[in-house]
Amino acid sequence: MKGTVEMKKAYRRLFLAIFCTFIFSIAINFHGQQSFAAGAKNVTITYWTHDEPTFLAANKELIARFEKQYPNIKVKHQYFPYDVLEAKEKAAYATKNESDVQQIFGSWAIEFTKHGLFDAVPKSMADEAKRKYFQAPLGGYTFQGKLYGIPREFNLENGGVLYYPNEIAAAGWEKFPETYQDLVGLAQKLTKYDSKGNITHYGFDFSSTDNVPYLFLSLILQQGGNYWKPDNVHVTFTTPEAEKAMQAMADLILKYKVCDMKHSNDPNVDISDYFFKGTSGMCFRGPWVIANGVNTYKLKNFRYAPMPSFTGKSLAFAAESGWGEVVSARSKNKKAAWTFIKFITSQKNNLLFNSKTYTIPADKSVAASAEFMKANPLIKPSLDVLPYGRPIGPLQSVDRFKQEIVYAQFQKVVDKKIDIKTALKAIETQTNSMIDELLAQ
Image (cartoon, rainbow, N blue to C red; front, top):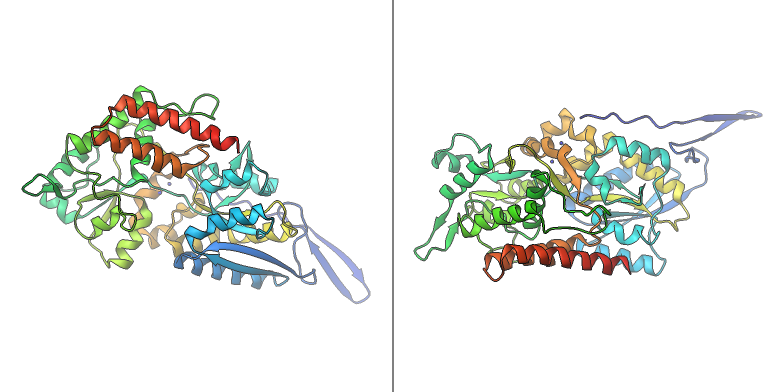
């Protein structure tokens, strides 16, 4: 998940004043505010993150590095389970008790930025970020043309397919398919059924609540379509491109019978688990699951290949913004907070973070670095497609759109309860109603 852009060095000015026998200095940091040089007043900033083990290890190492370089700034780090963090942050902002800095998921940002709760990224840092980072990760942190956070990862649910080389070789394929049509053909050969026609080995599994919506949007975009109306507020899904996309997805289940939706409703089992357990031959999933295959299942015999273009012309896909850092607009320590974020998002520290957390870099220079590629050879296909990513757009609630709208309507299509045109009309109507509802809050 993929131009190398070098970071511009921060401007620093040093003013010297000599009094008797000693010299003291005041440094001006990258956005013209006073940085924390030796002798400056001690400051403590609070920092909230989630507690996933690899994230926790990376965050702790970066905090230690920061405090060593900036001894006058202490970081009080608190961390919470993923499913608690968003609710805690909402409650804290409602009671004016939030931390100075928070690590958030990019799709959460819109609920805060529209109410003026995040501090805008200082202009020079924002200008640098627009050159430094891929477009898609910046999207969720951008509101009315201003940037309100710095992304750490490119949240990718597109672009790659898990597969076993020995399985596709046994099916008569020397290498992974390069066209969508060939992908479908291979999926048919890999699919196995029991005596009643139920799938026992999935040829191409894409049935998660993440991947159904993301495959749908990518198939629209790769045809040159667009699901946003000109106002960039409301959506349109009653289009020829959307109809062709939904039909192609339905065909994978109803016509080619390489997948079903029966196994994707267990919240405790990811569709990649079926792949790693050997019950699917190919799995359309984000590269973040690679770590699970290597570390949990101890597998070395699988690979990750580029998802072929639907049209043979475009690799476009939509992506929501992943994890990143924001500063409270009410923080009394904004200078220290942005000094901290500037430090932990340097090229060197972004490389550490993405390597330790097995996340796809939002930083173009990290994604293109030989060091990152050497450490993460399996995810090269994802790095190659990063330039084709587009922000998913201001849906207001990406999770509701994915799970309650797109996935739910697609389920009805494959259950033969409604036709595709009806499903697309429902997706359009329900999404626009959701957007209006949340904008009014």
